[in-house]
Image 1 (spheres, rainbow, N blue to C red):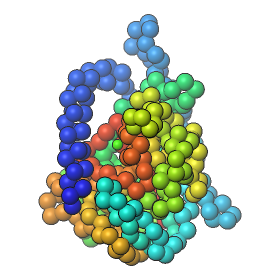
Image 2: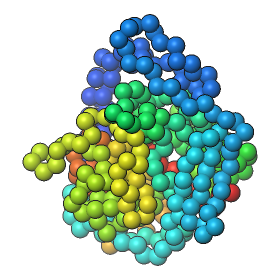
Image 3: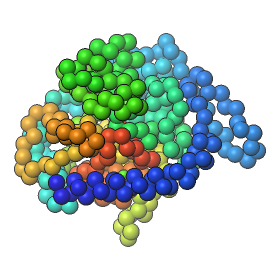
Image 4: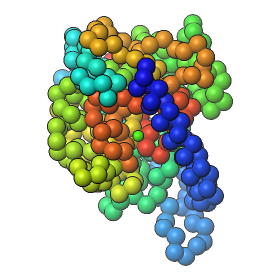
Length: 359
Ligand SMILES: [Ca+2]
Ligand SMILES: [Ca+2]
């Protein structure tokens, strides 16, 4: 648990710093925020002559939705109101090697087995978030994209783990037209579908999963690491050429910052061997699992969902992986574990969707 405690305290300190910095720029943030409800947000400016224009969000077409399987079933093309995204199949696999033999990473060598699942080829975009949630864009990086990049194709961030859980259910319901395949519930009998009111009220604090459901969900930590490439490379798709696969911060004398202190449109860097983009860098990605120790050389078994939830819900720490645009490249290593309180958020913390055989 030693390293877990370290990352907990690092996260707490980061949150404190963020609060201080965040509060001081709150006014500026609310000044530039406005309703960006798809279909509702016209671009009326505040009248200031020299301000950058607000991003114009594409209009949704509410008759367009559904999931199409490729004939080889290796990809699912999902369409929600005209916002399309692609899920890629990770095949079932036994005794996949994960972790790394170095104490610093809190992730000693271990193995895990997987049923097949589908994982989004990109981080969840601000566009998809807004088409599902139909409310203000929660993202810190909500304007001034890098030259030539699309604002709405930047990853959503400043979303809590609980809000992402609710989003997954919302998306499942909206794209399939039914709650039947929703994965997450607010009661242990899995009868009450967890929703955004639950997430925003933080009550109930517990989330329960019905793993037999095929709907959208967060990856487990093991699924994330398997999809990122396991032990094949240091970073997701390369051992040394980090700039080819990731937006990341500086490591003095080793890597120069390449992100310029902002998130970037998804899918601009090279994909890893599984066809997935930005697994290293851009935004950190929430996973389902509660933070916990991994025992060296353990076999986690098939479809491991992480340790049991802590007895006190306020100790509910959740894993996030991959590092972000502002992180030192060590955070972008496939093996590096990180974590955050379930109701915390950050300007570099987003998520990536997983689903089962959803139709
Ligand atoms: Ca990422
Ligand atoms: Ca980070």
